[in-house]
Image (cartoon, rainbow, N blue to C red; front, side, top):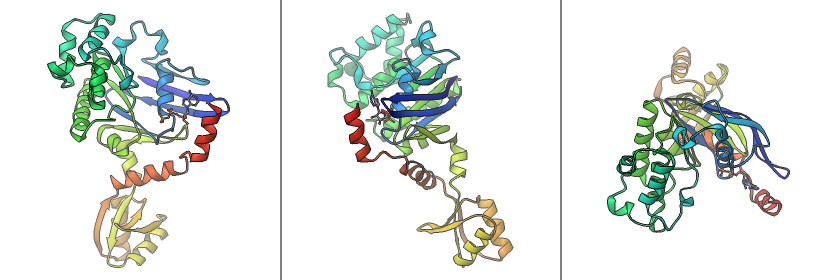
Length: 305
Ligand code: ADP
């Protein structure tokens, strides 16, 4: 439903997006995860025709954004929650969107209820909204045209934990009805909670992608044993490097494999568990550590821009 193919964007000699290829599927929430400056917003801006690509292409429902006849009816976009006209009320903003997209008038109140903005809040000017309220309004505006595809840049920014949970349930319901969701975040936890599929980007390049399950599997296993040194040696002999961490030995082998290896070596285990959660975090940090832009680069970039 969303395809990005060999997308590259250069600013001067600097590659903000470097040969990025991925797709986001209907019925699934796809998380676009990367540190600040990784190229997420640039990729999303190219998708919706706000920034021209240097090469490669992005399509939504098989077409370029600019070829969609009534784009708001096909793809809901939230790139910058603060980009709304600050002097308008939330209800006015939704009413304008509803009219432009020729949706029924009732849609405005439906969307306000969906994102839990009260009557009083909907009548307030957006300049007096908190960031979280702006995000809710932005999601309402993205959904008002009842689109098949949603593209949301850092939609969880400014939401409290309850707000993030609310958004997860909203996007889950939307995907369960066949919708395609692409959302970005620089926070692993948000993506972990919300997404089914994850694309990790660092310094303009895709460094990992797969289902959340696959990426968690890739994080390996934590194991404690009566004789950790002997278990580590047995794991290494079986082709699975193991390192000591605070939570026990950490290896890329699955829990089943570790159990089998330990049994074959006659080593009693004290604890055996998948290194998910923390494992994905380590993976995210490791994957992006060497692609993080340092300060010097940022300064050079600032001078060049
Ligand atoms: P993210 O959304 O992942 O935080 P961005 O896509 O905003 O990252 O930015 C990626 C890189 O491209 C950053 O180094 C940023 O400074 C640079 N960049 C973005 N827009 C421009 C621009 N208009 N001119 C020059 N550099 C830009």
